[in-house]
Length: 254
Figure 1 (tube, one colour):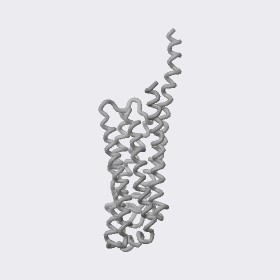
Figure 2 (figure 1 turned 45 degrees about the horizontal axis):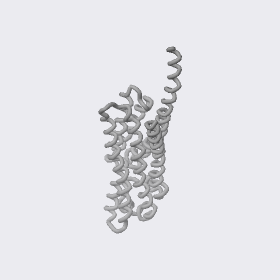
Figure 3 (figure 1 turned 135 degrees about the vertical axis):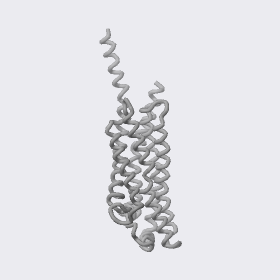
Figure 4 (figure 1 turned 30 degrees about the horizontal axis):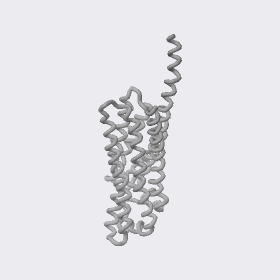
């Protein structure tokens, strides 16, 4: 009885964390988009001069600073959401859950990435107009590289989760979710092309490096949230199925 109560409480926490995926999406996109006057969701060209970059900050200093606060604190929601998925997926491994630990380390790295995006853009806005335009541009570039050039931990997490699902005899997520995660991980790698181009589809404001990976990433977050809720509900329903089938087996054997 105590075990059942403990499981119910644990599942309630996991359900709450599952909803933090959409919360993270709203906080990060809200901070990078409307709150900061669309400074980052409609990204400027990497070919802009340092003077143009400085001007974009000077025109919207307060909105950018508020947006950076939202982006930094969104990492709290991301941490809880990603950890909840890993806790549920942990059940698919045995007594040496190496893939689970790979996910936890990857989550830690992902959170640092998410936090430092707002950190660098925030510092750029904090000193805009007081330092040289080149310093502001460099800090702005660091933020953009945080968004697009740091896909490795996200890639590692998604591949580890996919491997868990494919290896499990009884996966908590449908098998197709493994291939879906592998598909999404490819876009985490693709975004790294930012380092080679300042203009065109593979630049920081390009369709293939910014818009497509960002859409795929945030759709992945919302869809994995729904799948996590579904997995928890399936776990809660399993004891009820066993309880109803047990008397039938007893009667049949009699």
